[in-house]
Amino acid sequence: MRRRLSWLGPILLAVAGPSACQSFPDPPVSFVAGLRVLGIKAEPPEVPAGATSDLTTLAVDTAGNAITATWTECFVAPLPGQTVNPDCLTGLSSSNSQAIGSGLDITVTMPQVTAESLGSPDSTGGVYFPFAAQVTNGADEVLPVYRLRLADGGSVNHNPAILSLSNTDSSGTATPLDPQSPMPVTTGQKLSLSVTVSPDSAESYVRADGTNVTEVVTTSWFCTAGELSFEKTSDAQPLTVLSLDQRLPAPGSTIDLWAVARDDRGGMDYTHRELLLQ
Image (cartoon, helix red, strand yellow):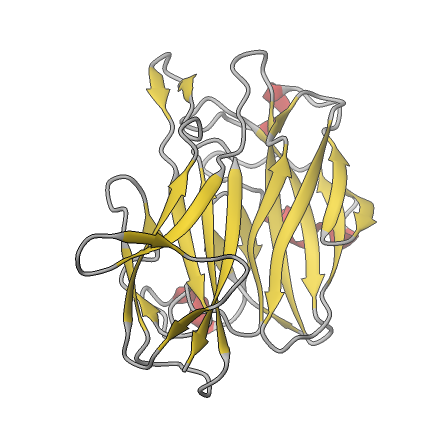
């Protein structure tokens, strides 16, 4: 069984093989082929000890194979400078981990842990408990670790919300892509893509140094064809251009497009659209 590796925002994915060391991989990380985990959404994304959260895994297999997932909770605290202790990536058989269930969608409970037991706070002042998964299609596997934020009694984080995914034409007019109907596209076409999130997606909070700041919502883009000018967008860089000039399927096939929005404290939302290559 082959394992695939990459780093994806607040989600750690176990990786193997020489391609993980390349600074500019070809194909790029945004190109989706085979088994991939593009994100994990927790609802809610911040809970106190003893409370539950529903994890939804955005896992895809472009070959159409069935995907399964098994989960453990990992009690190994990260060492200084670590986001997740590496032992959590192999924790499926570790004495420091405990099996908690299976499925791409699962309800987890924040254990009775303290903030001090979860390592040093990040720049937002938050600490996180890791839930590790083994996601497989029978031939390949990905080992994502989702870090659920422990509520500390302050302002609780909520997930951002994507309202629309749009294409902007040469006149500057943004047209939302219909989630129910694939947008017709042609070979060589360029799409200027952006997302609109709800006004309350970027929340204010008190950072670890006591500074009151507002979150930045960053969107990661993924596609099964072409190449993106920017793999991540935000208010500072709101548009990415999808050039449909390489890695194209046969005419008449659909192209999948995903946008995954994340805030600074583990919140996430995602949306999917289809393009029809003519």
